[in-house]
Image (cartoon, rainbow, N blue to C red; front, side, top):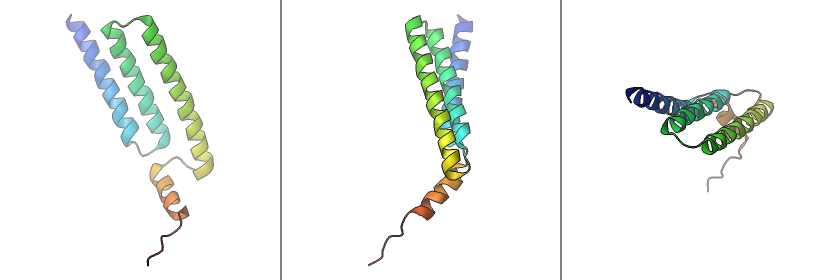
Length: 103
């Protein structure tokens, strides 16, 4: 019983760690990796809760699709901006936007 609680808490902590990394990383690839870590923690929590295999397979398919989309997005960002640093991408976007006229 205690082992199940510990596994559940570890899975929840891993999911929170992944969510924090995905939302606060300054590098686009690290954000994708954070999402993957979050999905792994969520899968651990789901398996510990005893959900059916169908839900675990569906969660795995969603995680895999997210990984593929994230990888494609990282490649596209690298091609467009020449790097993956979020601050540099924001600065490049600010420079490319037209200036507002002051009346």
